[in-house]
Length: 321
Length: 196
Image (cartoon, rainbow over all chains, first blue to last red):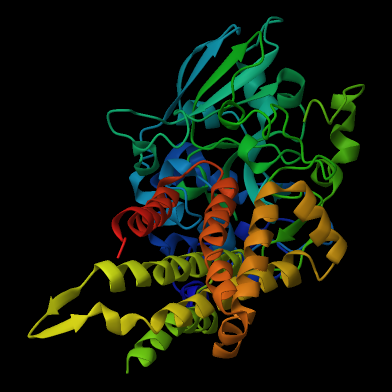
């Protein structure tokens, strides 16, 4: 049913040409392009900040710097209609339904803690100096489903470096938008201790795979995917990739993180994808890629083992899960 | 007529699932959707079957327009609803066994051992299977007074199903408390209010 909505609109007056959307393309087939091109017609998933900071120009000149060999991209509809974003509701379909409740303009990000350039930066400030890249990453949810997403953005290290973190900055903490006076629909109930918090060790944050995403499928992030900017840490379970970031704080000790606060025995600070660390609800040894009926084996560090294993050298990964 | 209404009640959810499947309405993760919804309907029908006796014994009758409906008439629903609950539990278990476990019984055994919510869910399924197999009039005659005792284990099965759901939830217990509240209410009514 949904499919028709996405396939019927492609021939309308989209300003995007295939060459605009997919420079040196790794959009694997024409269907992906059609979905990207039809994006502006999809009501609540198209947000106004695309016009900011030369977003369109950056998006159209983005080169694909990472890909997942031999894997098919998940469709735009899968990526944008099956989400965990508890601020917009706890059912998978809630974030898409309630996407309008998240207002992303104006948007600013508070930079705090051990750095030379703390302050409040507008989204435009954040984006301006960076060229966009497209990165196709696997995303693995702790609930044992996964997808392959073409993100658009820039490396987190490039962003963090701008604020000149000091030697005291051992960790970086993030927070999601939360306004108790005007909470997002999901924040009306204390399902988790709002605001949503996440964090990385400094070396994890500075790792070249850590990514600040501002778009997907060549367009700005839909609200339900964490507009206007979110983290993507592809070797960790999805909940580490915090959405709709309003605060970045350089800290000396390990910051509190939301799921860990809720149930420390199940959600460790690291939350690296690890098929040998079990979970009381979901065996992590296998996963269901959206679009497939049967489960497939889960790869160590979600398939990024050779890139990131060195970060955890000498650590007992069953203890520091 | 009454029985027919019971069948309709039991089959409507299945019809809904089939229609959604037919019209591609199961979303991005249809297997997860099917698992969740077959489980949901098993629980709802278990609670519905649990509601029959209190309604018959304690509910008396209710005015519906000009007609008076005696709740006594819904007694035949009890077995029907119980059997439909088992039908959805069977679908629920089958979807899990086929698509999550790829029929690998070593995965099943590991899950039963490692994950408490699977342990209690499986126990509940075994109880419901036993009740479904002994639901016929023939079994009832054969088992005599033991039959009533055996079939009261549905109270335990329902509690296990609720525990199964409780342990499955990550954070949002809102819906869970509705189900648990109905169960506690029906059990309280059974043991406290209805001593006829």
